Length: 285
Image 1: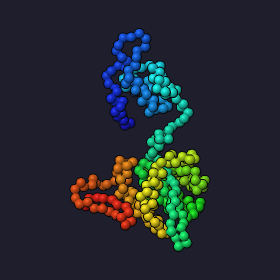
Image 2: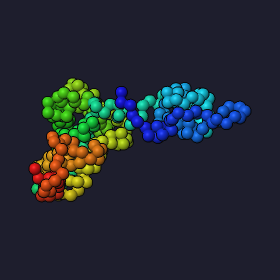
Image 3: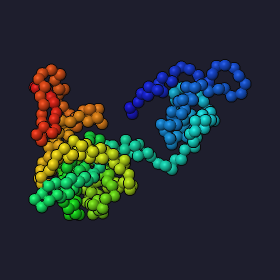
Image 4: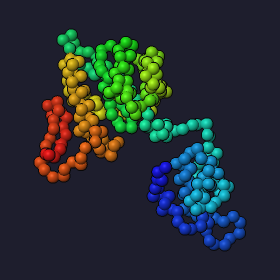
């Protein structure tokens, strides 16, 4: 178990007593720092009751009664008897299952064709722990047959849902294209479909964030003449996305890690894709 260091709590915990030293009749008055610690623990752990908070404080060298904890919580507008039926927060679920989660979704792009403007559907899947993205293809008509073929591509040995150390849960919205047959085929490949509640895009934030990046950095900056041009640009973008672009969610590192630390001296070279629409910079070897 990794012992996380919490600077706020650490600064509050020392070799001290939880009560003021002054003599006065009645129950000793709790000090301000202990009150702040109680509120902090309750706020960060909303399913904890007074006894659990009291026990955590005791581990930190702070001795108070469960009644004191209850009074502090009430004074700060916190229910001292949390509802344990609420279950795990979604953020906590994601953190606990990050190693086995993936998500999938569509976006649409309009392309020019000899017969006029057409809407093309693009399907992606993202692995949450690494942020790697697989492009499962594009089509004007994402019928069930096409969707089942997309599952095969995702579950292939070189797909995000295939091979070793793969995600085993795939999150998706309630789009009818993610049909029962689609979900059954996922299960046949050992992947559990996790259908999200309606009108909850925030629960699928990882792929929503990718879609935003894809549209902002590529789609809204190009005009596509035909589906093949869109497929080519999408492939180029994903090469850039994985091997060249830094990601804030990964502490500004690339998804594909450097084999060796990059040099800090030498000529700066700019690499360009799609005529310079996508740029990245590196030092000459």
